[in-house]
Length: 512
Image (tube, rainbow, N blue to C red; front, side, top):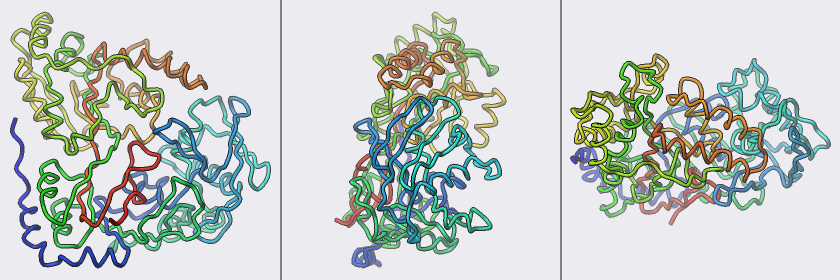
């Protein structure tokens, strides 16, 4: 199993590193951490610009009523200090009365009502409107007490509020002619950092908010954060080596190994709950019908030496969780009792022969371009048992079109399972619309039943058979978590999140 060589720009950066050895220390003295940003953005507003790196900064500047402590599987207060379910459609919140927005405006129930009404309005053109359209109304009972009232019972209401409902400063937002300007020049949140500037040339700058409320999970260890636009990974590494930045994300396993061995630099792998998975066309949507045979799907999975590939091609492999199904251990309601089929190439060959493929067959393994090296390694394993796999790498837009046009037989892809860490969300992702390759009639009734069940333990019992059936029928191979690997100056420490099992934010960096 061959690995690609380390990038030559790393060697160049190491040669240049001595030229700016004092730069990182100078920034530490100035209490400013400089972070490479892969995808520049013009708006710091996750509603209007739902992109991962926007979320990294937006979640540091904004606040929600509650947060999910994923380690304990329970909700904790942020802008709300208490809450209770009145009935299946209604949740009542007691709000904190000591919260101030970055603008100096006081936070009240009116800000929550205004935010939800804005997000529900079709004129706002939200990309993920279903995150807000389920709310019938926000009833204000007093300046610091309100009720969320749903149109229909929604058992996932609390996690949706905790993950997706960031509160606007209504006094600021309503004055803007263009609502997008809120996240460009006038952002005002309640988070531990406030936006100082957002510039197409100079990047994004945050500064610690001195009037932050005292909540254990909110923190701003470093006073200033400067996100520097740098779309090219090789350029990022050169800047790290020469003292131009202090930290970058998502380095390859080769880069992580090289940097980890160099004086003055370090790497840190943190859980991401980004799920790498292989979807198999069990329902025969594509021209190649081989995967409609359950034996072939099982053989496909059994042919792959998952552990060896993870160790060689997944950066931060030691940290990577090996998922038991399409969810992780910290995902709410994820309690399957079985696992994907184990590596067994001899057994795979036997199953292929039983299915009429003793001489093997041709297969195109589609893959999202950023993870094609993993797909190449998988294809090599498949060829050993007679599945003549070729790899077709593609960007997300092409992948989405081929999926809708029913052209994919097997695809290696990824999904940020930690973005909404609850099984109901993942079942919708994998078995909703054109994303469903199983077309298993037993799934829909159970999914509906789970969404209607408010008791968490009972919901887990409803979903368990579905998660186990995915493994039994070999519909999807949940391959690996893809950890986030940070390369950084040794002056920087990347801390574990106090509440998220799969996210590392700018609030999790500190100086050593």
